[in-house]
Image (tube, rainbow, N blue to C red):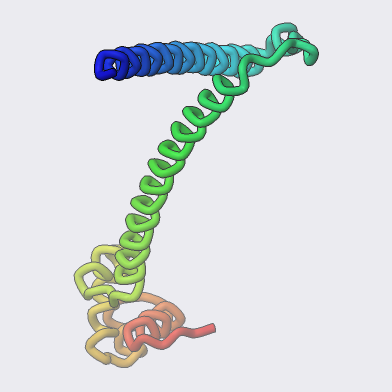
Length: 169
């Protein structure tokens, strides 16, 4: 009786090995079919990019017998997992880019709201207006700025207005 049971166990082991081998072959065939499908898609995309429309006109016949449903399901599952991993990678990249954009936005906002220092303003000004700007910042009246610097009254009023922080419309 024990001998019969051992033979039965060995038969079951052999059957499982055959089944495992069959599944391995099915996976390899599905992987090969998936690769050839991607290669065909790449070839069609390359042909579309180069303007060759003759190769895209060839479509597989609809009446072609489909492969085994197990292989198709396995290939589809592999492709689905591949696409999910790609989507997850893209989401991580998007999150990283959004964080960088937020940091840049904060930096730009801080730079935009920061008041300009006197040194920066002086370097931005034309050399003939540097002394007039300094006088306007010190609160010297416009008539005196006009006399000292030789600029027009409108220019002096503009410099005084800018120095006091008022904006004229």
